[in-house]
Amino acid sequence: MNHGDEVIIPVPYWVSYIELVKLADGKPVEVFSTIENDFKMTPEQLEKAITPKTKMIFFNSPSNPTGSVYSKDELQALAGVIARHPDLFVISDEIYEHIIFSGRHETLARFENIRDRVIVVNGVSKGYAMTGWRIGYMAGPKWLAKACIKLQGQTTSGPCSVSQRAALAALRSDGSFTEEMKTTFRRRRDLVLGLMDEIPGLKHTIPQGAFYLFPDISYYLGKSDGDKKIGNDDDLTYYLLDKAYVAVVPGNAFGDPNCIRISYAASDIDLVKAMHRIKEALEKLI
Image 1 (cartoon, helix red, strand yellow):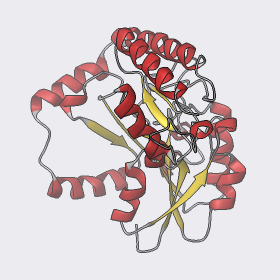
Image 2: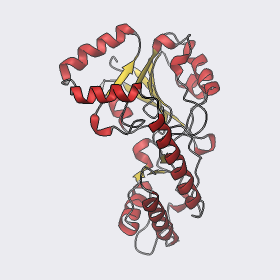
Image 3: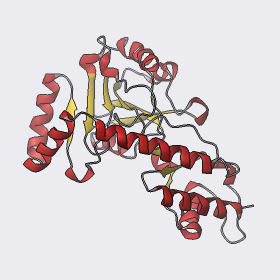
Image 4: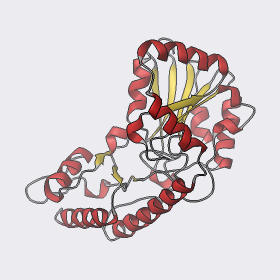
């Protein structure tokens, strides 16, 4: 990035993206999506957002916080736009690659006409449940990978050999553990969605990947339990923490203040208990 270079970021986004661009002295350009289109950026929106200053797109599928997954056809349409702008690069965050509930994972890097401009970032934290091992990796053009090595080598020490060996074993495995984990997450998703459907006013998509729900909570904005008035998503988040003892994340952290993020990376018992508590707390808002 050079000063003033623009980076297109589809909204909702993972919380770090905006600040990473600022840290690199770039300018974030947010492209807003809605729950009605499954929180996905369209080719038309992408084309409209591109200017002579656009340097890069920050892309994420499967998505945190929405769980949305782009299909091959949807990616191909976006790739067609990117191909028309030869100076445009893509950072594709694919950390949830192995947690997809139908079909297979697709990547922008599969399209030959833009492949040399796509940088894939990934790791073993999510798909292999190895969060504490702190192993990530990237794939991209060799010249760019070498440049990253120069920078990384001067800013952090290398990850320990035990973590590296464990990550290698995970990547070379037959994937049976990941399949078992994916089945569990799918069951938990359906469990929470069923319980969420019992709560009036909450709108949601059916996430096809990751382990998050991103329901629209705008129905409850402006309501009160007689003591606390819900003015925004932060208020609702604190209300649920205070009244229901359930921790969720306000949507404004991901660029959409009409939503909250719920993680279902927890036991079935805890998820049922949490959703019942959320329902009871929201019933008190009028």
